Image 1 (spheres, rainbow, N blue to C red):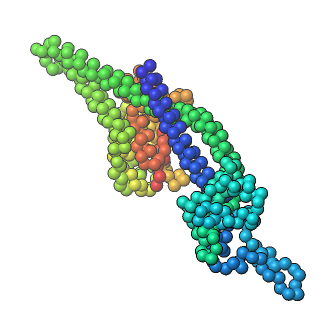
Image 2 (cartoon, rainbow, N blue to C red):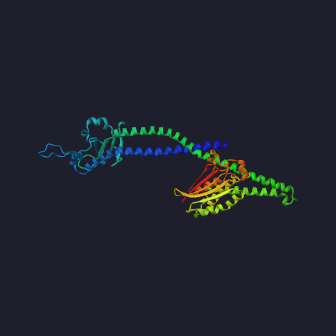
Image 3 (cartoon, rainbow, N blue to C red):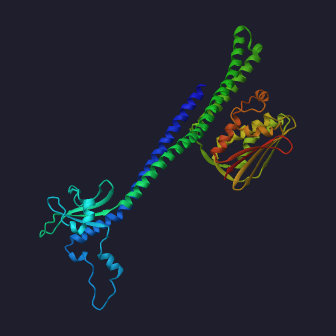
Length: 432
């Protein structure tokens, strides 16, 4: 119940973090898009205003007049020349005097002046800058105001105005679209954040459960030998005058459990270091066949003493770069399992060969084998297919987990298959 509360709180945090991240990203993206659209729409009008201003201030009055017709020709000027000399018809030129009165009312047009500019006041705070203004709270204009350079007339300021209602309508519609999309995006972000938070919690919950299972199994495995050792030592204390020979069985069992406890502690330490990435490989060049033969030599003698057949089929003359200590540990784990789960007259074999630029080592036996449905769990920590049998042989289910870690650290693979007749075969593939 406590763990579920923790998971729920953590999932809520992940959901909030994802939602905030999505919202910030979309907000930045929207601001960039909106500003780009706005600047793009107004760039043409601003360019025309600046170009018109240059034509009016270059002291060339003829630049605003249409080009003269040449004698003997009735056709109009070329289109490009007309376009170059003629200003945009959308631009309105307003001349102001120092008192803020419009001087060219007739040129502007009486109707336009009375409807739009009658109450319009001169604002000379933004000189030589393109500025946005609204007339009658309806019509949007962009303008540039600059001082008139001609001292022979009453004109003090010249204002170039261009109507941008169309551009402003596009921006307003785009702004509404952004707001609608933002609302939809927030709803989708909440859903996506919830789904992602659940997916993010799955490996955490899995790791939590694995850790709890690991601690529980480790505690159980540690408690059993400690209990046996404690009981046997307490029995020895009840008879302090007895000879060692009379209590040999209790002492031997305590020593056996101590050795088992030491091996278990060593395996747990190996896995803990593997999880924390503390263990580093010390690689060196190893001749595969010679190395395998050296490791298998004592196990061949053990197998013969147990009336088991041990065979070698070494066909790999290559040299690989690997950690000799860890590879030795790997083969010991596989050979120990083969010896533990075979009976008299069973066969144990090691085979080496090269395949697809990889070194292959197979350790097979004709022992009790593994059920097909249990093969997928064989490398899990503390997994034992037959717990009673494992207790007799001293296994705790950590060896194959360590073997898999050693192989993965060498960028290789390990798998187990059922032998054609009976028993199992472990296949290890390592890169050359």
